Image 1: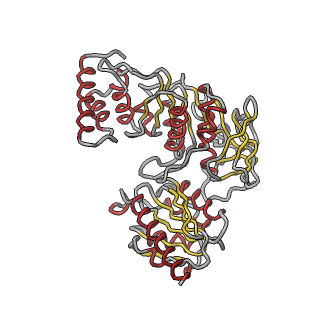
Image 2: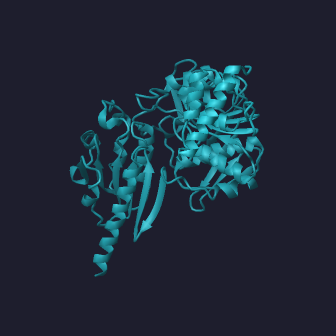
Image 3: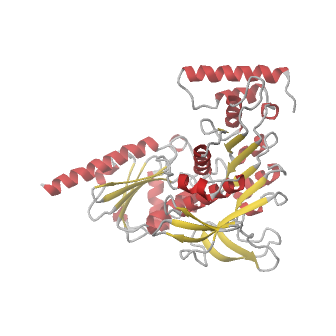
Amino acid sequence: MKKNLKFYIVLYLAKLSRIALKLIGRDATYFPGKLAVTLCPDFLGRIDKPKTIIGVTGTNGKTTVCNMIEDVLKENGYEFIDNHLGSNINSGLATALIEGATLLGKQKKELAVFEIDERSSVKIYPYITPTYLVCTNLFRDSLKRNAHTEFISSILSNNIPSQTTLILNGDDLIVSNLSPNNNRIYFGIDRLKTDTDKCENIVRDITVCPKCDSKLEYDFVRYNHIGRAHCIKCNFQSPKINYEVTNIDFEKMQMTIKSKSEEKYDLINNNIINIYNMLATITVLKELGLNQEQINPILKKQKIVDTRYSKEKEGNIEIITQLAKGMNPIACSRAFDYVRKEEGNKAVFILLDDLHEAANSSENIAWHYDTDYEFLNSESIKQILTGGARYLDTYVRLQIAQIPKEKIVHQREETTLVDKLNLKGIDKIFILHDLYSIDLKNQLKKKVKDKILEQNKQTEN
């Protein structure tokens, strides 16, 4: 698509708006791109793109995988553009391309790393062709946003460019069937001791063969529809994995990946979600041409950003904060599962209201009933504290999960929940929070630390 006079005028206006925003201290914004695609709807098609584009999409893990890819590339001297200061929709990508372009619309760098929202496919892929597109997973999400997996997977398959090489989670039977005619590379994790023969979750989004509609038989289930399976009637089955984790040593915090050879990589933490995120990152970096020596030393130093996961110790008690993404039943279920499987006696704060929307809206609460609250019905979880606009809905759901009432503290005001926290015999305190409750999470974390310190002083006296 050729550049025209309108394109140049819009490009200059967008660049001027970028300068103005920087002058007033608003660097993290998608406004220049929004301005560009509003004034010139095919702007993404007219502006030049970097030679190599890495795209990352999927329900969960997009931001984490992008951050890991970018950190490794940066440490190895690669220069690239990205959209981490904007958004993952068309206007966010436009902002990144505007910032990286000359006044003639040519890109100054030959590499880009873009986080791409699944539903924005229809507005992005007609104009941008990723060299590699990573898909981390596809799960049901908020009914107000991404709805059901069949809806999202069809959007992706109908819009992903045929020239794009797909890097897919081979343990996700929905992801592994995206755009079947594209060149594809699969990553996955071989059967673990913790895997089962039957699904423990309420939700499993693929139970019949996508080819013949016969029943699928799972070889093993990791969680929800993640695992390996085959059709009992036709030849459909989980794909052959190109980059496979064959062993995880949680004592040494290492995993072994088999591709053309076997290599060991250090784990960031023991959460299976982040192991998948690391594997996706390693796969795309290896395909880009980096080797183990260029990847592992940098990845092993990685720390999941505090807004998503943090752990610290106050006295003898660990305080763990973890993003659970309210209105996303799978993300919340994974968080609950992680809590129940951690050692020691635990207290759990649940702050899953999407305050950006839910507090003053009629958001459908059906996601609570797709979420495995039953995982919190564990002897090791001594207390559950929940608050916020939907605190009564959460309380009802906890009771349906047959969690004893005496274990539950529920109230509208979240900031005073810590007053009801019982520290007796507790080894770990989890604060599970939403994307829009970061400030609240930080307030509660400080109050928890203060309460532990106060108790320690009283014990010493």
